[in-house]
Length: 121
Image (tube, rainbow, N blue to C red; front, side):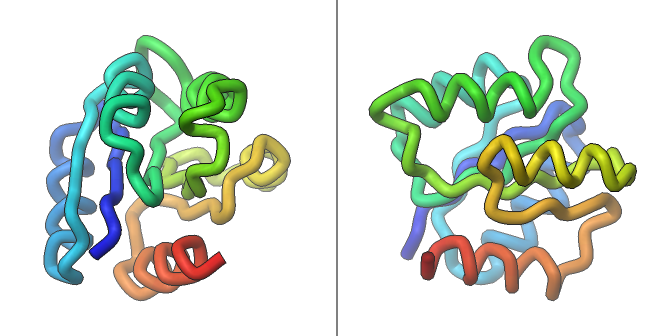
C-alpha cells in the first residue's frame, strides 16, 4: 500500500487525517512542521504528501517550492489541506504544483477521492 506523509502543525488535525488515512490501509508518516516535513519527505520518499499551508516555521507554499527543487522529492504528488478558503489561495496552491486543494474541516470522501486520483496519476 502507498506511503503517505501528512504535514500539519495542528496535533488534532494531524490525528484526524491520520486516522482517516490509516483506516484505508495506507502507511502513514507524520510531521508537525514545514522543516520536519521536508526532512521526512527526503528520508521516507512517500508516494503522496498531504500538506497544510499555515504553519509557524514555514508555510506550505514554501515547503512545496523546496520539495519541487529537490531531485529526490520533486515528483511526489502533493495535496494541500488547509483552513485558507480564499479562491486566490486555491489558485496559488494549484499553481505551485499541488494536485488538489482541500479546505478544513476535511470531508472524508473528498480527501479519499483526491488521494486516489493523485496516486493514480
